[in-house]
Image (cartoon, rainbow, N blue to C red):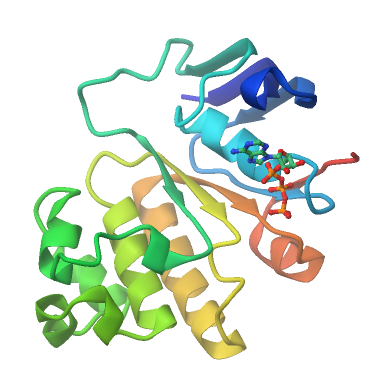
Length: 199
Ligand SMILES: Nc1ncnc2c1ncn2[C@@H]1O[C@H](COP(=O)(O)OP(=O)(O)OP(=O)(O)O)[C@@H](O)[C@H]1O
């Protein structure tokens, strides 16, 4: 059940190529790191793999086929800034419900307090809000998580807590994670395999 990017090429608005002939493959349950210098195209690759961008060249395949539209995307992305990923006018219960029925077990695993769900995004800390975004991304049907600098903005303790929960959950559900980061230390600690991107 692999997720594959085959000979991917991408350029924004017919500008310079951001990536070309990029091939990457992740197996079910794998935790893979992707590191590389700023601006080399890591986030662009994450968006291509999740189907948020369409490749200029090449293909993204899930189990050998295209990612079906019309169902909840099995490839979910969590970005660095949670406040940009939620509707500021929605209480967080509604945000979480975007991914289907709220999984109480997951909430407790991510140390999400019930009271937070009755608040608006501006009423939570960055770390609390990121936990909500992670829980939403890990809703039912998620098979691949693209964690794009997911904990970069958080303090070391919060970072460790979130990763511990996410890895436990991923192992139990046989979910793969692509850890996009510029922190070699973090990636080496979390991942069984690391792709080093040379720009
Ligand atoms: N929407 C966009 N329109 C035009 N160019 C873009 C757009 N988004 C990114 N780029 C450019 O594409 C290149 C790759 O950007 P990308 O964000 O994928 O890199 P990155 O490796 O994730 O960088 P960082 O580690 O700094 O987050 C950069 O040169 C960037 O300026």
